[in-house]
Every structure is written in structure tokens, then in C-alpha cells.
Image 1 (spheres, rainbow, N blue to C red):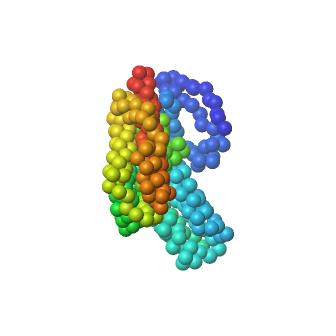
Image 2 (spheres, rainbow, N blue to C red):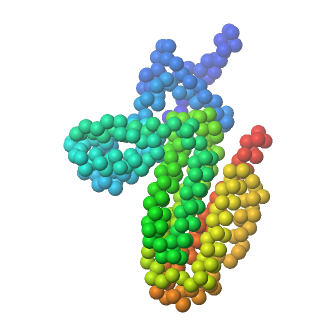
Image 3 (cartoon, rainbow, N blue to C red):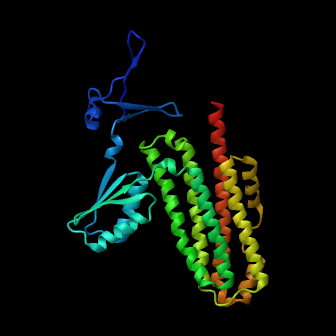
Length: 334
């Protein structure tokens, strides 16, 4: 619901706007209440009543809910920006509490606030200022890049232990991507303000998009690692060398695209996108490798497809870099 009010001016030149009574009653605003007024780049003014963030909590029923559904619901509310998520039930046994604790451990800054037989309360204590989006993006890129290096090495040497290690590290990427999503959710719900994150909602949207693309890059490293465990014979060196070169090229596209985004470098982004014109179908050497190693046809095909997909995600990030640069230029010209 939108309210409309006319501005009044006192004899001393002070501007006054009245607050809607039903909203004030609902928020507990009365005589002497302190209000925080926060202007943003769009020209709008945000009015935040004192203590509004203290009511930022929700409850989830555990009874009759499968654990995977509970995990999804907790993550959804974490992303939405709730500070306290209370899981309630008629009786939550040790196994149920263990599941809730494991979900909490998979999220940055979430701790168990209290446990009883009928409820487990989770509290998000992460301060957004401790996790600036540019540094988070850089860390996601570092982890995803290392995952890819090891995934390709595991595939070409049939190193199952290294492949499993890559799969385990995917959880680190997921935690950071969910943190970015939570920060964006808080911004959209006005539970944090642009001042606190140091950028506008529109600018933060671009960081959220880049984080999502990097998560998919990491996911493809996991696919390659899983494929590595089904390789029946080490690929000959002539094919392994071509695969390594292709992996280096794909990762270079991703790194260059992220650099173009963080530096708002239009020329760099366009150089990455110029690679789109290069042939991206199944290359001749991969077709030959599949013919000569038919027992490895499926894992080789998965490797090749993931390398191409990774490159595509680099192009997507480069396009986001152009969008972000255009937005920055528009803001500066106003």
C-alpha cells in the first residue's frame, strides 16, 4: 500500500510530513520515538523506526518436513535476510537437532542460539561490513580456479583422492555465494542500507550475478572430478596436453572477465567477448580421443562439455561487466 502526504512548512522553514497512523501503530511508533532517515542514490528517502531490525525473525515447523525440505526452507530464509530462524516441533530429537546444526554450519555467520526439546533457534551474526562483496567475489574466483586446476589434474591422472577433495571444496563456494545472496536480500528488504555495503542495490545486483556465474564454474569442476572417477585409462599425453590448454584458456576467460568487472574495464570485457567468435563445437582432437578410447567416451565428453560451459560463464560475466560499467557511467553523468 502506498500513502500520499502533502509537505507542510512551519514558520521557521522546517518541512513536515505526517506518518500514517495505522503504520505507526503497527511499528510501535509513538510520541518521542526515534526515526532514522536514510537518503539513497535514487533520490528516495528511507524511514526506519527504532528497533525494526530486532523483529527480523521467523519460525519454521519441523514436524512432517523432510530434512532436505527443511534445509531448503532455512536457506531460503537466510537469503531473505532473517536474523533469527526458529525451527519448532512437538519434540525435536537428537537427530533432528543434529540436522539443524549441520545446516547452520553450511551457512556463513549462522550459530545455534538455543536448543530445547521443542525448538532450535538459529541466529545470523554475520556483519555485512566484514564481508565486502568485491573481496567475496575475489575469494570465490580463487577457490573455483583452484578447483578447476585440480579437477583437470585428477581427470588426466585418474587421481580419485584429488577428485574427492575438489568435490568437498564446492561447499566453500556455495557458502560464499549464499552470503552474497543474503546481503542482496537484506538490501532489497531495507534491513541494511546502501551505506553499509558501500554500493547501490542496482550495483549489488551485478555482484550477485557474477557470484552466481562463478558458482556454476565451480559446479562444472565438480562434474569433471566425478567424471575422473569413471576414467578407465589415462588419456595419452597428446590428448592430455590439448585438454590442459583448453582448460587454461577457459579459466583465463573467466579470470579476465572478473577483472573487467571489478575494474569496470570495458575494453577488457570486449576482448573476452571477442573470443565468442572462435569455434566452440566439439574439437577434432576430442573426437579423435573419443574414437581411440571408446571406454572413456562418456567422461571425455563430460570434460569437453564442462570446459566449453566454463568459457560461456566467462562470457556471461564479461557481459555483466559491460552492464555494470554502463550503470556506473550513467550515475556519474547525473
